[in-house]
Length: 605
Image (spheres, rainbow, N blue to C red):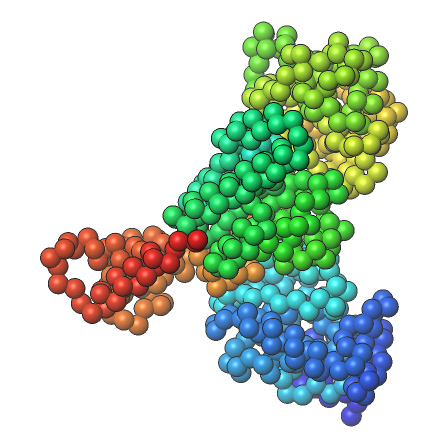
């Protein structure tokens, strides 16, 4: 019998339908070649999937490194098929009673693997996951074991979209099931556009029931700006750099006093690489939501390996660039709106006079906006410009409101609600529209949440977030002017689109949705820590029932409310509450000693 027949016969014992599909599928995804040691290896799309020299040794190294991450009781899920050397090595590396599953994105690729070499009995010791991404995610979400996703990059890259769809569906399902509560430290920047986003994220986490520590650096911005008065640029850069370093040390001190489960930083948070490496050595879980254009602000390159988890607002090339710079985990996470802030408003007659207009734009004076917006001042409609950094734009001075002052969020919301057509022109340092227009700015979601009509420049990632029946777009300045002229005469159609966009935001695009996704993604990659907490496995009821073989410890745990999260410090506090004269058992004394050790070692310096 040839290898295909042998392997399909093995598979048929447990997976008869998959075995039949693989046999009938035909191959051709992989190009089989002999390696230097004579074993079959493979290429796809001109790239080697396995070693050209010794694919078995390569797989063994991968399996040893990946297997070290897996904890007892977890289900190890392998992404990437190839010729299955790595799956075989992982199965042999792990204890027989530990579970391994492999995702099958392509029957054709599995046909190639089965036909290349005889695999052996281990094929029957792996769970093969096939079907649509949603089907696979549904099976995984119902598994009783915590999940550990392991990616064999050379093969997984052949079906990147398929694997991302599984992870996306899995995160959504796990987010909906989350019952545990985390302690999250949110680290904000000194100033800038990511500062309000940090506050929205913090509010969203609190609304989900998590305990949040807000490390607010905006209070130090005034001191930072004082240093602008130094005349020598090198002196100014040196002193401001040292100031940022001190803010990093301040952050570490805050974390040491009350160690969180997760440190979530927002773009431009003052955490330099040495601080991040220090946190990693102390086993903190760190994440960054980089809500910036990675092409324009490139400081992320120096920090890529410092954060354990990156969340970015661009996809494709952005994620690949972060990975090449050393980032461990990179996921796409678009921006959002806070419906408690960005909402429909009924304006007073005075507010309608001040904020009302046919067309309005709110934002800073980037180069492209200075070139395009003057076109709107020469038309029959009324146009108002709001925001700061418009110095020198003399042709826009007649429409610039409040003398170009920076306006707060509540005023922005009033402008949105008072305007017939809100222009949403994404920033770009060139003179026209961004030729690499991909990310969707926060204004898109905020306008939609207000239930107001917007006209935005086309973005590559927009269609996946909003339909053409929810947000109108333009691709050039001529189309911009004609769209405005058309939509000004369609008030009912504008209202219908605006309401549809608001409904979409409330269902899919709030900061609460984003924080659920972010936590679920980290929970999937860290099932023994963040994942366990989110699953409720640190709550008193679960611990007393599932984890305690000691009757006395189980009794202590049952003294807490069933849904309360319990850590060592809570048990120690309960023992101390007996008073200084209480006679303690040996186990109680040991727990108090462990808690004292925890207190002594929490100092991060």
